Image (cartoon, rainbow, N blue to C red):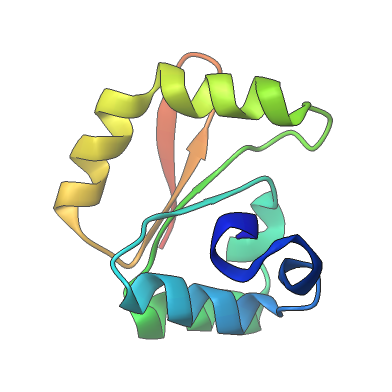
Length: 101
């Protein structure tokens, strides 16, 4: 998000907006907010945009730890992206599990 919107604006962009905009530009979405698929408005945005979301299920990781987790599962993430969306995946330490829909 920071790369796309800039650090200051990224904090102000609501989830529904960034889900739609970044998905329409061909991005798979990475987030530390595992609640995104349980919030009905955000889940609907994921469905409508056919988004593919990868989330860290624990909110207590540093940015570096999250980046390492995503990188560790890069091949699996790439394969899941090829399957298309809408879809949401929890990226655990040892496995990537589909949690949405």
